[in-house]
Length: 142
Image (spheres, rainbow, N blue to C red):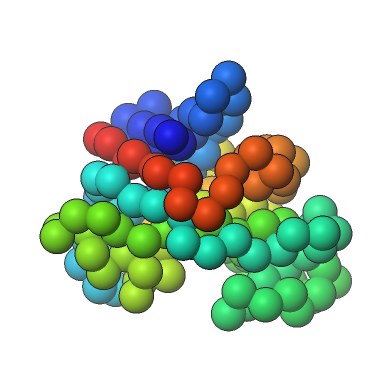
């Protein structure tokens, strides 16, 4: 199981431990809130296998590489692990497009800075992606 700690701004999986960034607006499951949902999830889709390290994704499809194709900040880079909420209070997670993904703002890792997703450095995202599979459980806790 992947464990995300909001208070520590870390993601842990097996022996891996990485700094991450969660929602700058805090936690919650409200649509459009920019908050990171809490509870139990599963990876329901994985995107970017074999894509170059700095691939940019829009709509879960590759659209270029960073920085050449960058459009603003909070770019979704490298790989995507899309999350499905498994509890009533987080059941809208899939519809909110909450992911674990790489970021171009690695200098903000360790602080809440995302629009609700869990961000990792591109290198850490690549390593995590290579070790997990569809159905891997994710726990996001305060």
